[in-house]
Amino acid sequence: MWTPRLSAATPLEKANEKPENSYGYFHGHNCCLPKDKVTSHEIICGRFKRVLVDLMTVNISDTRSRRMYKSYSALCAVKYLQFKEYPWTIHPFSKFRLYMEAFIVSLIMISDILLTVHFSRPDPREYGLEGYCLLCLDITYLLCKMTNFFTGYIVGDTCPEVILDVKRIVPKYFTSWFIPDMSSVSNVFLKAFGYESVYFEQLLTSLKIIRVLKLFYHVNNLSDAFKLKLAWNTAIEITLLIVIYLIWNMFMQFAVEYMYEDSYTPEKPKDCSWITMGNLWNKELTTRFVYSMDRAVGMLRGNANIHILEKEGCVKTFLIVAWFISQVLLLHCGFKYLITLFGTESARAQYFMMAKQVEMYLDQKKFPTRIKNKVLRFYAIGFQSHFFAEYRMMSCVSGQLREDIIMHTGRQLVRDVAFLKQLPGSLLFQIGSKLRIVMFIAGDIIMKIKTIGDCLYFIHKGTVAIYCESGKEVCHLEDGDFFGEIALVMSHRLRTASAVAVTNCELFRLDREDFESYVACYPTVYEDIKKLATNRYEQSKMLDDHHKTELNMKKSRKVELE
Image 1 (cartoon, rainbow, N blue to C red):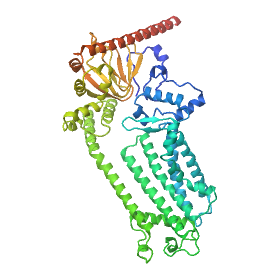
Image 2: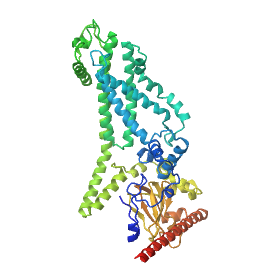
Image 3: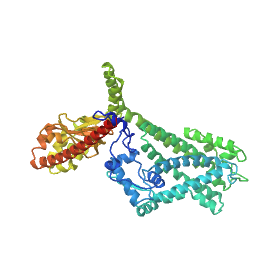
Image 4: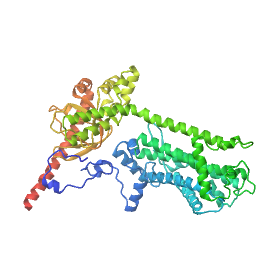
């Protein structure tokens, strides 16, 4: 959404208006501030190095990086720090890492499918096209895993931190995923040394199943990066589980028989072998592949080849294990679906009913489509498409627990404000309980200049742009900042600037009455606020006067030229 200017633009301004500049973060906001005003961390380098920096450093558009660093200035600071201190380290939230994870997911899936196709051959020692592709994919996977020696990792849950120092990354990788990753490509080393043993080849090839863990790890990261909904996450997980089960079931059917016979083409195969019973030892690849798939689907359904168990001396451990895994898999998928359906639908249904009521009200009042869509979007952002009544939970708790909840759910930022740190904890709790959450959609005008100021705002989430009287964008305020205090401490009680939501904002509002009751009665704190407000007002006034002078000079030059 375009952020409107707060003063009428002259024709000269429109002619000189610059194209939209969002710095890759403030989408829809035509930022008039130069980059050095938005952030002091500017990276200066050549074009080629700029491409590398954008690929390897933190991706500003990634939702995970926004969630961790919260503000544009913090993201720029991390980007600059990595450029200066760790230029060859890959940030876990970088574009390169995102592309790499998507590539690895595709590589694992294609490799597993080709693995099953290759070992469906009558003699897997004969390499066809799929065999050479499989070998190339294994080598590519090995090279991809080498990048883990240069990829940062995240530590901490409540206060996460990204480690970018290679001296810490290498030991961390060696003690975590290095051995499993190397084990999953150990068959490549077997081929490189020319060691031929059916038993060991099948055993080492079976270790590729370790990649399944990494597959789901990367899929979860991609889902988080692209902000997929719970229903989509569940659908993807269930689909992958079923496909992976079928692929590895088919491979293990052949692998177990090859290991049991210790040969790909036994002269006298065992009578209990399903390949012998199906007369498939000399059949073509397609026939063996389809037959094994039919058995795998049957095991998943729980009704495959039970007659083998009834044959004397032919108890198949693999069949029992595969059947057990299939039942666990089906139970997991069923529970996952039920949790997704009923765990979210109760809250979602209440939200849907509320949204429908709001929509009916808007239709009844005949609001224009623009306002109607904006109101519905406001509800969607505020409730995250779910209904949750906080007051119901808060009414069930009391005492210290209630205080902890109030101070933790965003009100904690009150304690971090410099001029409020002098207040006692009990008073901070009372201030926190008086704060009201208000939300603004990107482009909304939060407050207008020369209007009566009746509250003070604390920014919990989002970015706010401040405009002076002439319409010049003065600065950006982000998480943890506050504004609106000038009207509360000045005698004229008027807003001296306008504020516009650059992104979707969640603010905490402290009304004038509560400010005067809890804050203004402390002279030291009040004087600190007044001093800060005076400095802000003087700086804003100076910038406004300077901008007005520039506009008048441009207007005079234009008149002279005419």
